[in-house]
Image 1 (cartoon, helix red, strand yellow):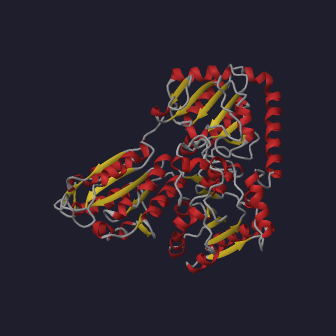
Image 2: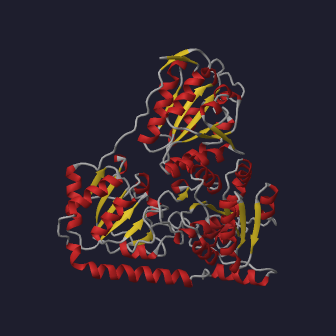
Image 3: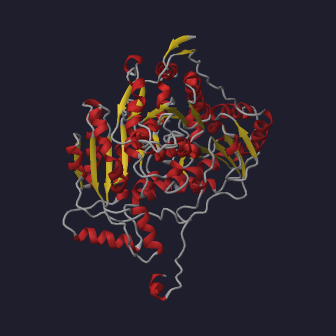
Length: 588
């Protein structure tokens, strides 16, 4: 036991857990601890807004596989983080949010910046620790860090501001790290039997593969099966795109090849994925989920097994370990699918080739509304670019080892068809939470964790306006990134619903203000470039990334695009309007 203050116990416990970076905004509530961050080897990265700080912690955690840490002033500083912690929750990121709280003697009196902070995060954290006695500072702090990794999600450490002070005896706990196994023998054997008897197996490689650092094991199993491998929704980095068995992502704006191939499956191995509902919905007018297939699901969280899809075998285990165990079980067995491997390979190649050709030819949207918008753009002074052409050019110009974050929105969602990666921990999105303002701060956090990797954010102009102030964070603190802003002057995803369901009656969807985001970026100290020629898209991205990596320059690329729209974002959630009052009759 060592004599120290609670602030020292808090900081020393973070040091024991390898924390070197914290994102947030300074505040009096934790200033006594913050005062000793520097000698402890901890950098506090000051941000512009606390939501950005929590997104940065998310990006940092998703790239590094270590804790991301965020902290802020009690009350408003903490409440600003709720949205971003929810995004981290759905990304299974080990983020620890430290929430200094109003002092214990003032709680319940309506004092300055007082709030009950635990209920704010109850739904979006795996564990909530509250320091009700300063003697438990190290114990509960350590538990928050342990649980963030063991439970695979955010945890909250709530500290009344007066609990940082005092004089206590402390033993700093040794971090606890779990070793997850492959799963139970019975379920692994049952899964191996199903795979051995499959005529057309298909593997879904999910986020659990990335979190388990299990790409090599997943590739080995896929090669033994000779099966198509599709990515789960927004996990395009869960299998190398150059591998001949990679077929692209499922879900919204995913790969038609992936969807057509999984539709033929008689056995689906869902490896490290919860099979979320938004990632398995019909798309491109394809209701592709194979209703008659046997489903094997592997997930480290037993609560996810069979939650969304009815499954035949559920394996609670680490994705990498489970893949290795299944490969071993199948290594000496004769598989039914071995007999038609050449035929299945030919089918896979044909579907992938057809989809790539379709993407090459799919230069513009062809629905009536988009055609009208394309004609309107052609009549305007200047030139506007087709989003799909831009996305294809960006894809072709991406450097090796690139990390990409995407915001929510129409063009960003369409990018799901185009983004391909060779290594894990490369693709970051807001997952099922789907909040705007995600991409920029998340890629800043990712870059802070992996300074040697190129970092690119995609955002539409609506989402960009919510978070663009964090460009100042990148500039001020030498965390160079590249951002691509698709400027189509509208809330595209929701506007598509108004086109399809509400007779083109546009309410609150226009963002026509004459903004020049390249100039705004320059005012914040970054390089700002506006692009309105297709031939410039690739070279400008390449130059911006070169500046990022060699000159440590942050660049915002503003791409001027047409108002054409992709498939509706929530076709599953809307229906034709019904009106009963006469004055609304024309709005049916």
